[in-house]
Amino acid sequence: MMVGKPVRQWRSICKGLILGALLTTCMILLYCLSAPEVQFGLQEVPVPYSCAHRPSAAHSSPISNSSHHASGQRTCTPKVDIMFMKTHKTASSTFLNILFRFGEKHHLKFAFPNSRNDFFYPSPFHRSQVKDYRPGMCFNIICNHMRFNAAEVAKVLPADTSYITILRDPADLAESSFHYFGRVVPLTWKLSGDEKLREFLKDPKLYYDPEGFNSFYLKNLLFFDFGQDNNLHPDDPKVDEAIHAIAKRFHLVMLVEYFEESLILLKDVLCWDMEDLLFFKLNARKGSTVSKLTPELRAKALEWNAIDWKLYQYFNTTFWHKVNAYGRERMARDVAELQRRNAEMASICIEGGHAVDAGSILETSMQPWQPIGEKSIMGYNLKKNVDKAHRKLCRKMLMPELQYLSDMGVNLWITRLWGRIREILHW
Image (cartoon, rainbow, N blue to C red):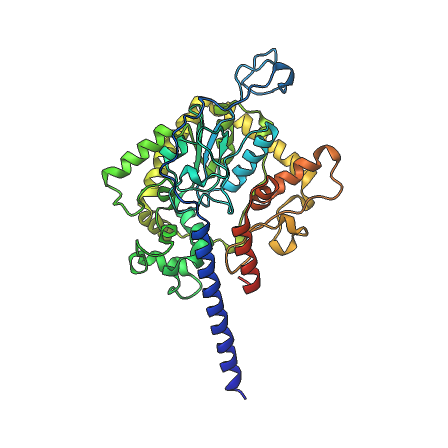
């Protein structure tokens, strides 16, 4: 009897693995079949220089930032044509929520993907991936995950578009990416023990294969997101060329570590209001699931992600040049004001005033997407009896990315189906 029980357990495990493999294969096929055929023969119709509609003075909202004269009149017009290059594991879901609310407030047109929440990443972006795209169409904002392709993006957006992106310290990004995506990278499956990241960083070349499925999640992910070869040698001239091309293209490169300062710079670049910047931190992990990087591991992570480190250092320098130009004291005052307003909104909107574990989120509609195999992403409970004036804004600010996309009419059937399969398999 004692022998039979382990045998049955192993049979059950094997059946689960086989079923999981079959379903995963089916999902990959669905992803491939649903990918739009790249239409090389698309007619070239120029996009208008600007897709912004200019509200009349009667409908302009009063403003209280530096973009106004003492009389209260606006001295610049808010920029509404925006390309946000959504990099992985960089608080980009939080920023996406800001963009969604801004777009809805100004009735802007988003260029969304179809059937899933990204532009068929990791394939390079092509304009045919945009839902209902037709040559010459006017879109204001594009912001979902993509592998950047400057030439194709430029064919979707007007010439006056402001290009924005965000970076994160590559060591911290490597830790976060390894945790979130590790289970979908077969190269990591042979790592044993509880400290897989430590084992990987001891000798990455032992496990890494540039041609491996989803291997890009393990090395220079930022550089890869920008459409570049993440396996180049850091001293290859192509690396510096790519960094300079990014610097020329993007009007603002924000930093996760200075998110609030980044938003203040954004407000200045785009002539937005302070109220447009309000946010709650979304898609954050429980602290207990974050691997603490020792100085040795951090150094190894930066060495392994040397191109991303080079990219980050370059834009860290330009970031502080912008802060200095803005004024350190002025920046400190504005950050304090943003923090005050965010704290005020938290007291109005969030039950308990803070994020909670996934198991403690009461509404299904507020459940964030989780990595395979665990529920480490936190979320919020909407406070009961929120006053009518704030009810809609509170719900929007707390809403996870996928639910917000659905709320805006995006068809996510592939993403939803994959989520349902994971529920069945308890992944």
